Length: 228
Picture (tube, helix red, strand yellow):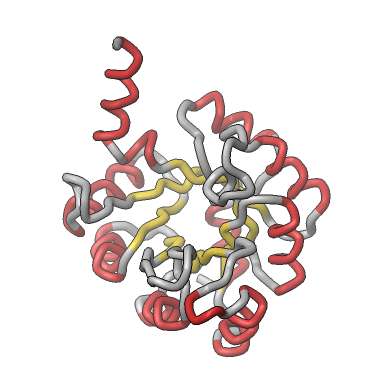
């Protein structure tokens, strides 16, 4: 698929995030591939996934566009979603249709600014689709100026300066759609179908749902907390 076909494939669709951290019971590439297969059978338009091993397993199981990330913690930075060129290179190599990276107003490892980092990334991979994981409007605007192909609301509520923001952040989705010229991906805090529908009604290209579908430990906690 070329980039136009990829965007058409996910347009008006649901992207299911199939991820499990090392501390979670379902952390296994085979299980994530099965999660992705279940999402595919349920009608998902794409998958968001973390790590090379998981993405490879998922791509062997389903023929859907993948938003790839690598979560990697570095001691000198709070940025952990595809934070350096090393992670970008690895995701390009395995053929991720879209690569998402942290586009918040925080320094990447080694004190590198987002502008410095993404300028180098874009120069190296001019034809790759890149998604900006942002937390506020100013970041989305900057991501558009830097040349990101897609703007996501992924990090809203997860940066110190957006802590406590209502999730899902429908207001941010609407501002992005109305004031920016790039396709918008709604992501973050969508728990129920009604919220998904409301997000899509803002005019976003598509939406990502993860925890509410693919993280049974968190889903169980939510139900247990309701009866405490």
